[in-house]
Amino acid sequence: METVIKLRQKSVGISFAGGGAKSFAELATYEVLLAKKIKVSAVTGTSMGSFLAAGVAYGMKPEELETLILATDQALEESELFKKRPVWLTLLAANQSNGLVMPNRLAETVASLHPLYQGMMLSELSMPIAIPTVDIISGKIVVFTNNRSYFAQGLNEQTWEFYDGDITVLEACLASSAYPLMIQPMLIGDYQLVDGGVLMNSPVDLFDRQQTEYIISLGIKRKTYEEPALKSNEVAMRAMNFLMSQQIDRSISSANVVVQFEVDATTFEFGNAKEIIMAGRQYMLDQTIDWGDLYEREVIESAREEVKSDEWTAIKKRFKQWFVGKQTQSTKK
Image (cartoon, rainbow, N blue to C red; front, top):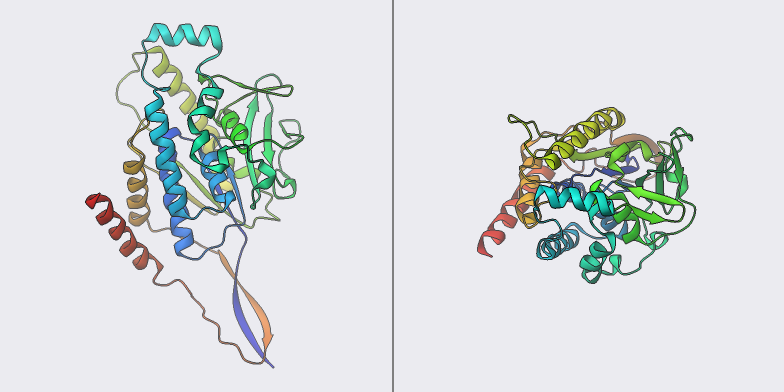
């Protein structure tokens, strides 16, 4: 017998933050992880990030998730649910119905795109997933999950609770995406639920670190402004963004890797998913990400076994070649 040193990959969790259409850029990191043959053990997602997390938990490969993103983006654009409206109509709708867009209209818009949106229950997803939303009656974070043992063990029980029961994937994602003044709150049981980003836009803190050892936090870098907001809805959006940014800064500090994409897009302007995804890929290529202690050495007694000390030295080069190929295909189309 001889002593062999092997590298063990730690269990990995991905946190997908909200950001509306801009969140589509976060797909690029998932592509890199799979290109590096890094196995993902659990996911969390807020708002639009919950849709990405659900796709990963379903078991989609990056190209499958990209196809769904593009289809969702096109469906939302063609629905005109988020088209710009006069300020007076925005205020009137907000006063009469708690939001411009009804969740059932959103559900109807995307339901035909994939089985994930056609009544599939959260419990049917193969990977542990947690999706936060906020109950505006109690002020608590309400967490939808298919595996409680993976999540929320370190949170203050006075400020959050698990949803008691199963729920469809689409309902959970829509509840987490109910952005105040834009989308009506979701009434589920005794809860009146709005966008999880109000209190937890980057759901890093939901992971139980005993179950998930290595956390990758994905999000969108906060936009800076040079001009004052002139419309009431712009003022509200900026105020929400500033509040979210403060709690994001606190939550991502516990992540092992933080990726904050720079995306030149508008939160509720759909129709540019392809460009946003490409921008995300370019951002990943331009960054030098320190994957730190993703792997740890473990001693194994073995008679004969060859072990590679580093299995992904050339990964970035291969990903760049793949990315150039994708750009070429996109140009031809």
